[in-house]
Image 1: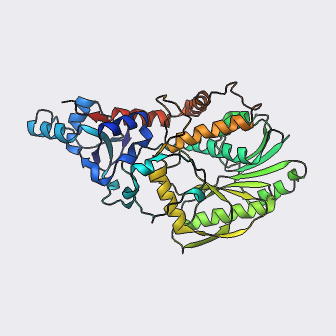
Image 2: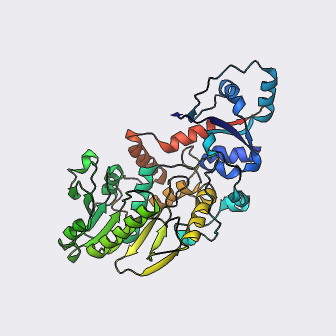
Image 3: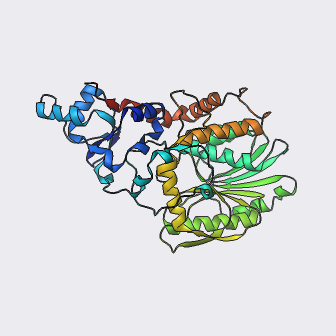
Length: 414
């Protein structure tokens, strides 16, 4: 539960029986069914809903909660208006009055047969709008996002037959997820650079060649270039730096990444990337493949950019980029993937992020059969082991979201 000085609002998203069945099995898809047309304010029924339906709240309201349960008029209102759908709470500062993206929330767009990995595969483009979705039911889990995007990168660019793959990683701390990657790819050797402390087990791990607790600079890049690692081994470069989220900061960070790429000359680089917002339509950078990120923040406009050693200048259409990511976050992520290999398990569901996770593990098992450290080919078992490991020192974001949504999915039985 979070504390905040803003006022708390409770809304209900009206649902029919069919919607309820879908959401109960696929809780991360719930927001797809909620538009401004079927959302109603139930704030005054908060005490009633807590007492009679045991709903859960994310935010703590600083106002006194009087016992309203004996107010017959209010009880009647709550029974008639607030007991047939999904209840969720948020802060009044996040209230929205319009949402153009709602017109795309049709069942034709909910059921998907084809899975996508890249921004280029998104056909739709709409004008970006600065609103957050209500409710929010896709999962944001930063460490899992970092793990899966790194695994995707390595699946794309290395093989079991590579004797040694050397990886320079700028912005690598704390590195909880990297410890899993060591086991998944035993032929990788790592150079980790970050001014922050790393996870304790990182420092003595046999696959870690060097840890530098400092900022990555041009001098750092020259230091690695002079090692001539690429003479005998496949060399990769990962950058996860972000000094500040402003447009000027992003442009500076991304220009620095390119300078380091040019100095180090890796076979491939994997960069955190996004188009600046407040610029003219064209953003001049370098051509690569923009990969979508699972379990990213709910309104993220960040992708992962895969670059080859030889760079090609390219102009990105920033408006098209933002519009595609709006469609991705609001329509694709909470939609249902028919060909998902996840069976009913009450934890992962058929949403984009969970489907992405399952496909990635399947692709890993197929490409690296002798590397698999889990002694199992059961995709769900491996997914659970990975999330349990990441959650060992922090909350399990998937389990928390599932519990919140299913608890607050209520129906009037009268």
